[in-house]
Each structure stands twice: as C-alpha cells, then as structure tokens.
Image (cartoon, helix red, strand yellow):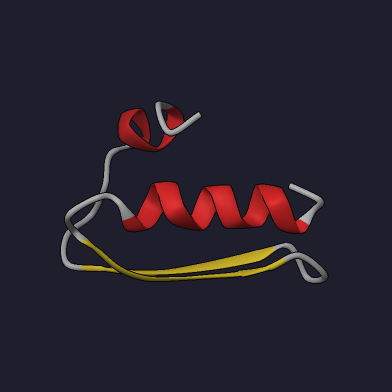
Length: 49
C-alpha cells in the first residue's frame, strides 16, 4: 500500500467488518494498528481485496 486512496479503501473495508473498532494505517512507517473485539482469520483479511 503506497497511496492515500489505497489506505482509505483498506480502512473502509476493515471498518465494515463487525468486530473491528478502529484502524490506523501509517504509510510512512508501513504500520497498521487494528483494534478489534475478536481475532479475525487470515481468510477474511485475504478476501477484503
């Protein structure tokens, strides 16, 4: 992910999931922080795109 558009799309996709509370994506450091109620499987994450 390298642009604001991709960042926004990723945030929207993650926040659309019921267990996700917050998403913070820092393009400069390539760090994503997700606050969630329960763990997500990688299968769900892979289907976001």
